[in-house]
Length: 186
Image 1 (cartoon, rainbow, N blue to C red):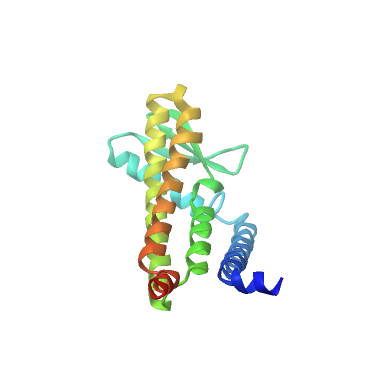
Image 2 (spheres, rainbow, N blue to C red):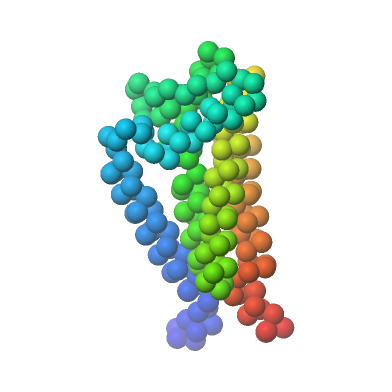
């Protein structure tokens, strides 16, 4: 058993680090959601911000867009040219995807400054890509409402997780300590 633990030490360290960071960040995020419940930003600050930024971008693309709080659930309605097309819920704000991204990067940490910078830059890329994803999804739902299932459950999740996967691969192949370790073993 000890031989197996020594042999797979790096894998076990990755899994433990990943799960520890993931659980801590998820618990912190859930605490934030509980504390932000009932504040002036509905349903929470980040989701509210994403909805308002979506509206701003849609207006910049010459759509008459607005967001309003949903009356029966914790979400913001996106209305384009007077037509309700989508709702922005807590799961649409990319925070849970950013938590997943950060957990992986920390588990494969490189130099401290590089890791910190990549976590910050990658989080911004994910947030911005998610924002554009919601804008394009809203436009798609406005013009092609019968394609809702395909757009919302297949194409756009594939795109956002694809971006996260590409960011992970760039990290592992260019910046993480495991890349340096593998080079010295060759």
